[in-house]
Length: 385
Ligand code: SF4
Image (cartoon, rainbow, N blue to C red):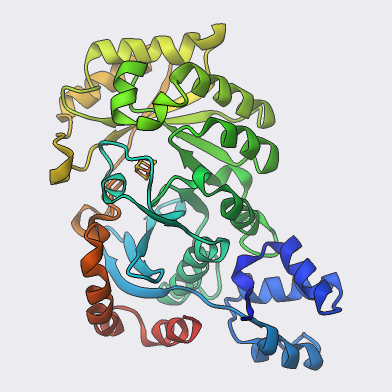
């Protein structure tokens, strides 16, 4: 079996090239071809020595993920469902805004954490994605969008959020090289603050991430006390709030001018009352004496039948936001994007919940895909898979 070069960060690719007797600068050239130019065919790589171009197909390949479906919202949001084999599929979502293009990327097929309000959590855990499968979402989206939006080779994706399916910090060994690819100037060159890892609070891995790649950190908080958080985010029973907030402050030691973004999904009558806001203020401003340098992001819940939960009315969200803002906490209310294609937060995996149907749908929708994705991109993906 040959190596998939999407699995490597630059160091990994340099080691791979060294194993072929090639110098490091060859790895840099290859890396740029793959990530900056979207090449998947070694024969295109005109500045590589011919002997290396001939050797590479015998020891390596560059394989992306097969697109099962692509849906584009009226607001420009695009959602892709990718086949990751054995009936599993993962989603990535592109969200265009005036000043940025954000790609939401998945790290696992399913998720083992099982948060109450999350449709991915309800589908259970299937497996970790490889580094190559994480990187392939960005690689495909970036080069597809350049062609789709006719940018003349200009970069489209400026921000990546690891907020798709899965708990990224429970797939740490695949995540870290993928983050390094995103940050590498020879690949996507994203700045550290424009790559966000979102975690439900895997405390030991937060510490490691701070040491290894201190990108922006978002923490799924969703409750201001342990009793409620135990019910909404089961991982809280292992790493309760005090430990989680200590870990946030340790993380910020690695990125002193940063802040933690606390995500808070607004659930009607569950965590959206004024008393919850007051507890939340106390928690983030007083924890450990100094509090945590943070922003609060209030997220409208996207209901799905199995959750038994209801979205907070807008006036509750506004009142909650006002209490936080009045206390001096920078607070935003997330705009829902891509509602018409189920691409909003917490809706990912809605399409793959029933795994028994995924295999069937993959077969059916490969045909549909031909009409949804420009022929050029389909041909390339089909070749890459
Ligand atoms: S919110 Fe995140 S950690 Fe929780 S179940 Fe969903 S994907 Fe997993």
